[in-house]
Each structure stands twice: as structure tokens, then as C-alpha cells.
Amino acid sequence: MTQNYTISFRKGWISTAVSTALLLLGQLVQAQEGSQGNTTIFGGAQMTFFSNHNFVTGGGAQPGVILTERASGNFGVLNFAGDNLTSTGASDAGYVDGYVRKYGAGSFVFPVGDNGFLGQFAASADGVMGAYFHADANTAVTSNLFTGSDYAALPNGGPFATGSMGTNVNVVSTVEYWDIDGPNATPLTLTWDAGSAIGTLTGSDLTKLTIVGWNGTEWVAIPSKVDTTSVLGGTSDLTAGSITTISPLAPDTYTAYTFASLVLPLPVTLTRFTAVAESKTVLLGWSTTEEANSDRFEIERSQNGKQWRLIASVASQGDSKVLVNYSHVDASPLVGQNFYRLRMVDNDGTFAYSQIRKVAFAGEGGVAPYPNPVVDKVLIRQYELVKQVDIVNASGVKVISNQPPSITGIDVTKLPQGIYIVSMTLFDGTISTHKIAVTR
Image 1 (cartoon, rainbow, N blue to C red):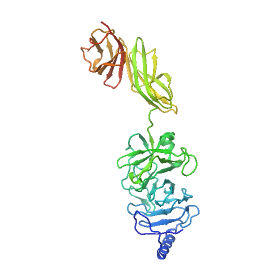
Image 2 (image 1 turned 180 degrees about the vertical axis):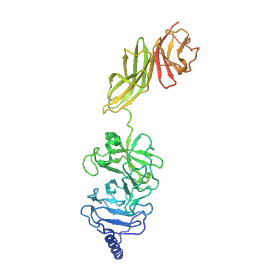
Image 3 (image 1 turned 30 degrees about the vertical axis):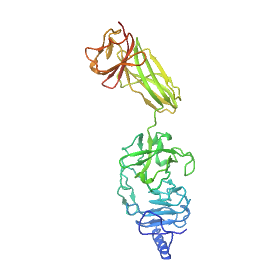
Image 4 (image 1 turned 135 degrees about the vertical axis):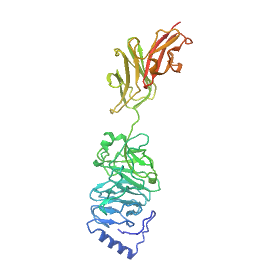
């Protein structure tokens, strides 16, 4: 194995021509830098391996940690130059504490770590360089092993607020992150172990895991897929594994990378949810146009919109891409106001809530239309609580839309005789729905 030391840091191919004097200098520097049992690459210097390396047996560098300077603009870098090279034997006791760059073709697992923690990543494009930071991205501060103090926030652009998140990102890791650079598109793979706390991050649901990148203002989800077999070997699970971007991207696209948990799409696409007073009961109806791994609908009721109680459970279709209608009758509604919502539960126990619907019975207080049957004008009890009124005929067509209620009521003299649904949207966002009959 030949090593090449250079004094200035630059991106580009490292010359493989090594003069005798430079080689001797490199050996001398290595001997000095390895005086504590490890190899050190100071700021502005580079060391290059032209063949495979094993952190257990050494070879070209002593076994154990290879320490490189991390300071912005003054990197020390370990290069791997050659096609399809491998770096094996990395562990929490043997890795590169700092920046590693690869030159050549073939996927390469970067043996990077930080302060006794291994945090490898993989990429295949020529010229990719990166380092691992076992630090909270909110501070982006790690120990400077050269001085015994801390670096300023790294890389440039840090710190990276984990509370600033893009669409569908739910929680961003505060355990670790990576600085990965390079202009050429490549699949990127991040690895984790038990210390990454992926179970805590995702609520023990590995399907929620994604790679995110810092775009300068927020963490953005990058379409990613958990590798069935980790790039480090073994099956990916909550304690160890790897995840890879679905499409190649230039690492320079983002300033930093880490793990995050996604907000998964709802198990169903709910297109309708109604609650209608009918005699002394409430008829609940809802429709879906798509279901995926859906298990059931739980109907919850409340008298004040705060404390909820399960009153019924209806099995779902499960998997469907067509319109499916559901219904349930609450035969014993509460006296006065009744609030209803659906709890849509997936097969794995995840769930989401529908909007809230409200029903009040005439004569029992609360918002309600009257008289019923009606001849000319529908009056609204407690109309001052109502933002707008919609009236729908038996065919589901709105015949009166966005009508603001008033003390004089709503004129229905132009409506044909028949049964109608009066839907009242309250200022608190709830919807109260009642069935009325228009007569002449």
C-alpha cells in the first residue's frame, strides 16, 4: 500500500505519483502522528490508500482510530483511491474520526465515526467526501480532539434546527448527522446501530424512517427505502441496519443529512362524514374512495367536544380503490348536544381522526332548525353561533349554499316539497346536521 501526503486541501484527483522524498516525509509524519497508537492527519494534509484497508490489522496505518482535522477550510482527509475498494473491520474502536474521500468506481462504505461512535455511510460516485458527527444537530458541536475543546458548529451553515421540518417530516433525529459532499449524483446510504435510537424516533415503526437533508432552512424528506439486507450485513431492524435514497442525488444538494420519522398517509381517503338527527336517533354516514390496510372505523361521541367515548366500531373494507359507503345509527344519543368523530384505524394500529360533526335535537336546546315540517322559512335556534347554512336535497345536490343565518330565517318557498338535509357550520368549526321536510 502506498500513501501520499499533500500539504494543501483541494477537491479533485490526488496525484498518484509519489516522490521518494515525499514518501519518506509521509513515513516520518506517520511515525510522529502515531506516537499514541493511532494515525493523525493534520489540517491541510491528506493521506491516500490505494488498496483495501482493515482497521483491525492495520497496514499502511496503525490499527485503531485515524484522526483527521475537521475545521472548515482546513480539513485533514483520508483518501481511498481505486475502483471497488473496501474498508473493513471498522468499529467504535477503529474508524476515521473526520473526513474520508473516495476516488474511483464502485460503491464504498465510508468508515467514519466521531468520539468513540461509528457512523458509516455509503456512496458510489467518484469524489464523494464525508464525515460523521455524533452530535445534536441543534448545536452541531463536536469535540476537537486536537485541542481538547469543541469545534464551532460544523459544517458551515450549522447549527441545523430539528424543529424546522418540511412536508410530511414528523421528528428529526437529535443523535447524529453527516456532512456529505460531492457534485456527482449517487445513491446515498446511512447506517444505524442501537445508539441511533431508531425505535424511539419512529415509534418502533420502521416504515416511517427516512433520510432527510438540510436545505438551508429546514430538513427535507428524501425518498428513501430501508434496505432489507443492510450494507453492513444482516437484516435491517430497529437496532441496526441501513437505508438508501430511492434515486441518486448529488451530495452537495444538502448541507447535512440525518434520519427522520415521516407522517404516514392516512389508511383511508374519507370523502364524506355526516351525522343527521332522525326522530330520536342519529344516523351517521361516511364514504371512502380508497383504503389501504385499513382495519376499522371507531365512532366516538362527546357531549362537550373534549371528553370522548367509544360508542361503536365498524369493520372497514380493508383494501379498496372504489367508493364504499358506511353507516351506523346511534340509537341512544345524549340529551342536548352530541359531537361525533371517526377514529380510522390501520392494521398496524396507527390511526387518524375525521372532522367533528354535531347534532342537537329540537326541544332539547342547542343549535337546530325549526319548524319541522317547514312551509316557507327555516329558522335556526341559536343562529348567532352559526357561520353558514347549506341545504341539500335527497339527491345530494346543494340547493342553498353558504347562506348566513339571521333572525328572519332562510327562505325555502322556492324548494319543491320533499326531504332535505340542513347542514350548519358553526364558528367553532363543528358541523351540525338535521333532516327537515318541506311541505306546502
